[in-house]
Length: 114
Length: 113
Image (cartoon, rainbow over all chains, first blue to last red; front, side, top):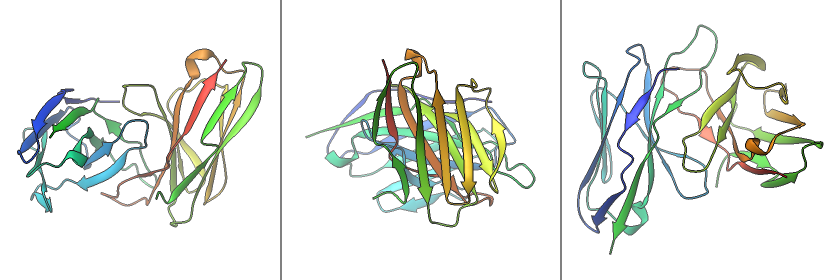
């Protein structure tokens, strides 16, 4: 199972600042890309899917660069509630007639400071 | 609130016990998954069920036995576990369609004495 690499942090950021995370993936055949957030002792929750055209959801913007095998997440006007671990996630492929598990990066720990 | 329900939330068992973890979803998803997550590590895939059939087993020891009784239910039977098996066990489900994300339950926190 190929890897997903991301900076573990922690990123200590003042409230209201803009913060950017990046990750790289090694399997060029990967099909689907996501950012999940995980709070301490909770399950991962989908933050957003990532598309080559880029996508935005409120304060969050995600971008995929297939040529460089690189995924990014930008958080604008950060809030205290954004403090969490952000997991870069890749679905390697979609086998014919079936599904495949997700490959997770180790996560980037974000701390928003008041 | 999660749409994937896991029970129990917490489980403490001895190494000789037999127990089962349960997962249920009513979103019509035809793929279901088991992941294991250790502290400060990302989730690791254990099993994938597609259309109620086991399609992927990530070389998981036989002391973990998955079962998919129907399209809404997924079980994980546990027997003779080791202390290193203590972890958060996460169930997820998804549609079997390109680009569809997986939705996770809130997990069962398992401790092996």
